[in-house]
Image 1 (cartoon, rainbow, N blue to C red):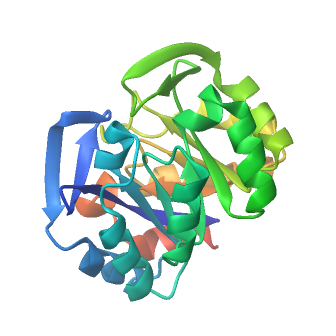
Image 2: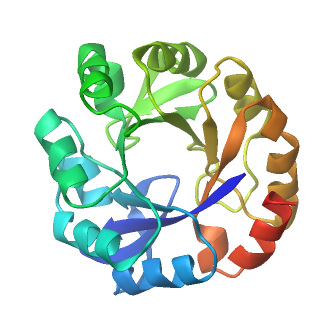
Length: 241
């Protein structure tokens, strides 16, 4: 099971949001590159980066920072936020990123997802952000009527490498991840699913571990690591036991 520390970028800084609210920001570091090194040194096998500014603008804003992070660590980096065209996918891969995460565009323009999965096999991940089973798009600004499980199945048919499932009602709230909805989505597909949003205690890591046989490959973890809810090393011990 893979535990992936998250680095969310806003104005070049490493921040965390609550429930995706761009006005509810906590700055944890002014040096996201050093933060990436810290997580790698503590045992992270992958780093999750989100360009929050890019998610709002629909195009990369913190590309140079992402490139610096990819150059600074010896583990794969995955990037999301504002990736809406093939040129951006190529720019990130050229910058040393291993996986590119598609969000809104994967749902709004299904042929785009099919195209990039064909062009860049094994490099495309889709982020499904949902509340009460319905997808949220455009940096969580728009709640839709799209069903998260049906969307996951479409993404699988298109050939995505993995899915990241975020319960936006729990993200950044330290309330625990949504076990039932995560399990249901993972059971509905064969593609690896990573939980995101709400992982806050080592008990949550144990619950994730229990879902490993049902298709949950790991989790993206943010605020809990930054606020000292647990150490990455302790979480990895449980996840890899």
